[in-house]
Amino acid sequence: MRRAIALALLSFAASVPSATAAPPTIAPIVTGPTGDGGWYIGDVIVNWSISPPGYTVNYGCAPSTSITADTAGTKVECAASIGSDMAYSSVTIRLDKTPPIVAPAPNRLADAGGFYNHTLTLNWSPRDPTSGVASCSPSTTYAGPDATNITLTGSCRDRAGNVSAPVPFVFSYDATPPVVSKVTASIGRKTATVSWQVAGATAVSLVRASAKAPTQQRTVYAGAGSSFTDRGLTTGRHYRYIVSAVDAAGNVATGSLNVTPGAASKERLLAPRANAKLRKPPLLRWRKVAKAGYYNVQVFRKGKKILSAWPSKPHYQLRRTWRYGGHRYRLSDATYRWYLWAGYGKRSAHHYGSLLGQRSFVVR
Image (cartoon, rainbow, N blue to C red; front, side, top):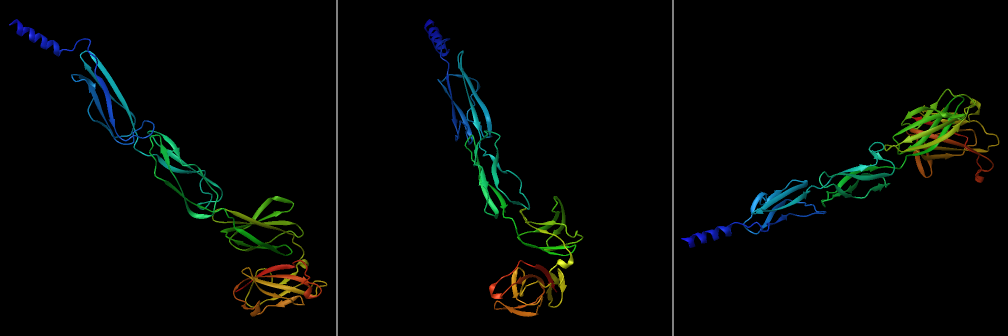
């Protein structure tokens, strides 16, 4: 009987930890794809390794804890004991599976008509609420060539190592101004008919200023035409006209000239009047120039010279048809501009004075 009691006491004593027993060893086991800087970039599972056997879980220590949502820091804990000796361990999981959200950030809005017309600087505006942004594609500067539907791309990387897909920025660029040429004027006693040629423009304006007060300007014409007659001018006063042409991208080109309306007797060209509407070939007439042996008349249509003649008298009759430069031309419905020079001496000497004048007329 005593032997049985002794054996029972020994068995009970072996099953109860002593006050000096060591606490358990706890270590987390984390599985999942790792990124940069201690971040995970895919689903994470946390398990625990606890030894030796015979421990008691105090709290936490859940097997196969899954973390699938982005988090800047989720703590997983485990506490276990052997007898009165307790151990504790924790692991903080930082998970970011989402690449940055990226938007193009040009340094300004389009200048006009959806076009940029001078140097554009393009940056990238990212947003990453979990790990934050680490870097983006470098800034891009674009200064040509002119084109439409230009595409520049960029991407950003977050601190976890996720990289966004390339983000496009599509735009149009035109930094080439229109061309303004052949700004001329036919001057009357109190009028000035200003004419011009433009290429690549969507609108034209004509500004008049007094030579004595150049900053006091007035727009006298705005539209898409090629000439304008300004009336009510003061004889003998000096005026300056500025032709401004603008294209769809907002580029502007200018041309200018100075005019001084004078007495009608000073006008060299007599007929037809400026911008006359005609139904038959006109007789071009001008004032006789002293000592001039002949004259040179040149006629243009759509910017192309279609006639050059050398009459000896101060007039020239245009025909319905004629030949010039090996081609036959017809006086069809169009706008024509004629120019006049006086020639001196023998015609073979090609001795001409300055331009005597120019005018336009319209055949309908």
